[in-house]
Image 1 (tube, rainbow, N blue to C red):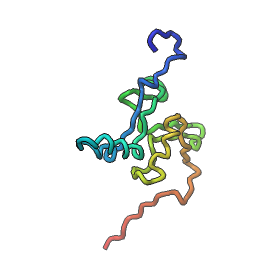
Image 2 (tube, one colour):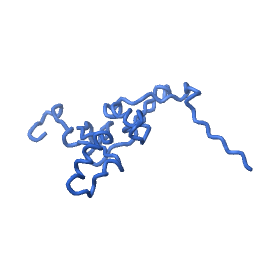
Image 3 (tube, rainbow, N blue to C red):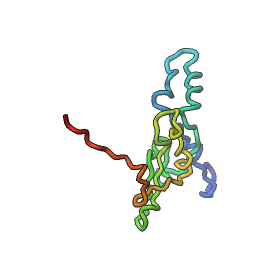
Image 4 (cartoon, rainbow, N blue to C red):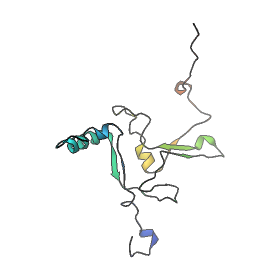
Length: 135
């Protein structure tokens, strides 16, 4: 960016690099002399995301800085709620073996979002909580 007055050529990506490390599995090798970094690298292949260059800044719609990034984005369409979009950083599941562990990362990264229905909800996908009978 330095020395370039053409705003269209500015690239914040390298400055806004993001790495998401699994809070437990991403640190398995911490404190193990000699092999700790190797363990974290191997396990991180499956559990971590990045490092990736992120576009955006603290004052844009895709708000991202070196220390800040939303864990969820929600764009509400007030004229048609069923056209609202939602995006979360990685996925619905915190279990590494699940197909839903990192399944939403690409839409989050590209700031596309996933349709978030309000009126047309499939009945089979609704969680129902039932009070247990008292004994």
